[in-house]
Length: 110
Image (cartoon, rainbow, N blue to C red; front, side):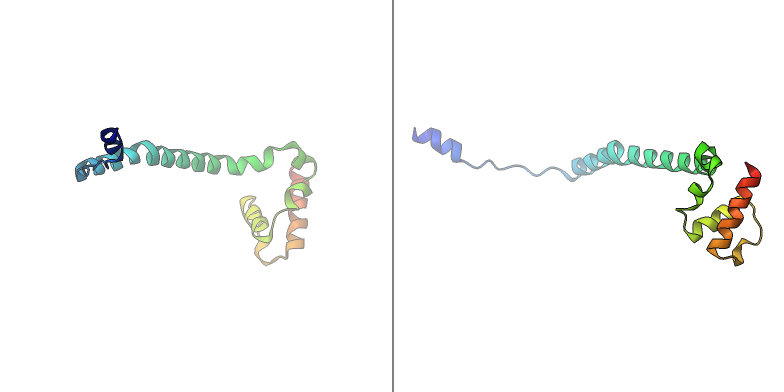
């Protein structure tokens, strides 16, 4: 009985792993985890950039009521939209006058 208890209580001493094996495990972790993450992130960013410009004008609700598009936008976003639509002279307008001008542009276009 005493022998079985002493065997259970004995501490097992682990041998340290070689540095090359630890480096190899790190390399495998990069291959398996990080590289697919980078590929997925790159793919999502590229698809967002490609569809961002055309996505705004495809929704039917915005074509019927362009105020739905312009109401939540801040001043910087309104200016970027004016630049995208190639509206000249938007840089010295207020937010309200730029919104009115963009609404007129949408009414003429649609």
